[in-house]
Length: 72
Picture 1 (spheres, one colour):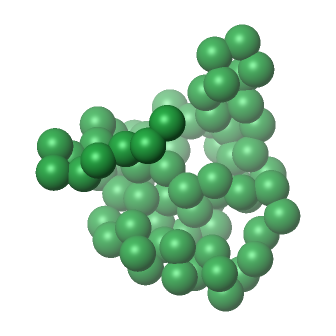
Picture 2: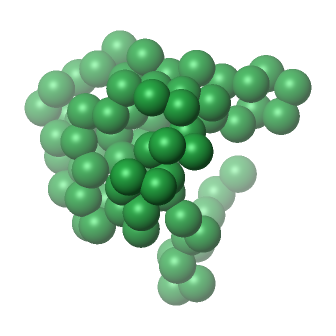
């Protein structure tokens, strides 16, 4: 599923993606297979540890909440 469709379908959720494709020019996810989604990122990471997908990412489908810090 392409990233824009994922964002529409799973709005304001954390998603666990497998088979991730990335645009190497801007390092943005372009598509992936949604394995799990939830509003709580800790639950999504827990599922990632259980499933152990090979080529995965955990992403938020909207702007990050202001109270959440991001590391680059």
